Length: 446
Ligand SMILES: Cc1cc2nc3c(=O)[nH]c(=O)nc-3n(C[C@H](O)[C@H](O)[C@H](O)COP(=O)(O)OP(=O)(O)OC[C@H]3O[C@@H](n4cnc5c(N)ncnc54)[C@H](O)[C@@H]3O)c2cc1C
Ligand code: SF4
Image (cartoon, rainbow, N blue to C red; front, side, top):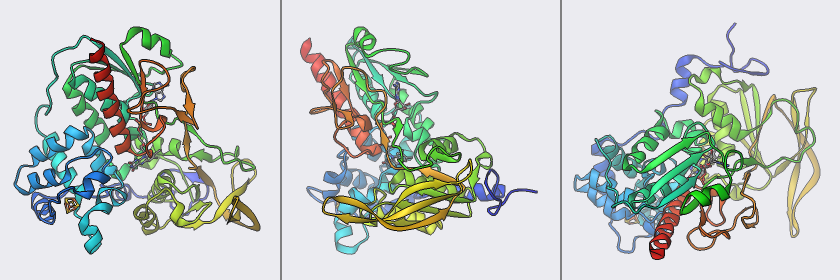
């Protein structure tokens, strides 16, 4: 008999084939040309526009919206790509409700911002479906730069360096480029293999040689890279996952949310991904929401997200919390896991309610249990595999200014480096800015 949402345990194929197609369809389908014109018409083209200040890549938003309004979406895309070469992905994944759209004056006045993200997607999609690449490389400089990590930070850095005429060698440990754009972002935000299409389009600049399956620390050292290149940019992201530190964490079916999401993103057929009947996700950020929502979309009967503090402190935006609730995810706040129960595989999680005190968060004696045959850990990622000898600050690579590390000739950016807020758009900004600084440094050396 086929499986259903009520089948006990962790099994694949809980839904009918059509359900998967419907559930994982584009979350925010593209605007038509007419809809884009209407949306663009709402912009006041503000002077000193607050939306620009709120954008980590400082895209000239009023300019690109005006270009759309005057019927020139390809010019609008160029305006976007000059600041943010991954403007297509950012249009799909940016929490615009916390960035440009939150700052939009129409949000302040009417609680209905200009749809900047959807307009950005309209413009970038238009240009990216045309032949060719919008930028040309400068004359060759004869300089070689190694970029380690082909996620948003590494890709943005590599593209900007290639534009300046440098030769770039881009290394990534995984089989495909794209970083979390390929292995992390929720499937319904980036449909139709968009991450790979975007990488291929970005490579159209030329001058970037990509080597996949090659890891710093395993296949090469930082000294090797420094010896063979004029500069090195580290963009290795956060490869490790924080432990729950709860009893029973080692039980079967207690898994890292990012691993589950990566498997889901790489699946040819979503009906092959096993999911629990009762799923518990521990954490309150984007990863937790993505694991919870996608479990529900795969047919889990009940999905509960449990976060130790209140809703306002959650890393996931209000819109994401709303998305989770609208898909049937139950959100429990103010509770932390004490132990995972079960004979071999997890069967339930015991939580204690928490209390905020002057000295921090405390567990209370009040406990409760939630049934679970699958538990996803989503309490944050951590840096793994930083090269020896490089200074860290907190748990990240210490950088000053536009990504300079403690080691001469080595820059770092994106999630692995200090500063920024672990978003795709921030990683792009940091990669771009480090490239500008690497270029200026190498050219000053003569
Ligand atoms: C599940 C999930 C969902 C998210 N959703 C969103 C979202 O909707 N919107 C948003 O703005 N942000 C989101 N984020 C955050 C966003 O994905 C990251 O901030 C962004 O990808 C960081 O880019 P990066 O280039 O620094 O690192 P990554 O994207 O992590 O890329 C790092 C790359 O380095 C490679 N690498 C690692 N170690 C080595 C090594 N030793 N040698 C060679 N290569 C190495 C990795 O294979 C990887 O390709 C999400 C994150 C997660 C985990
Ligand atoms: S703040 Fe809003 S109205 Fe003003 S330029 Fe930006 S998008 Fe347009």
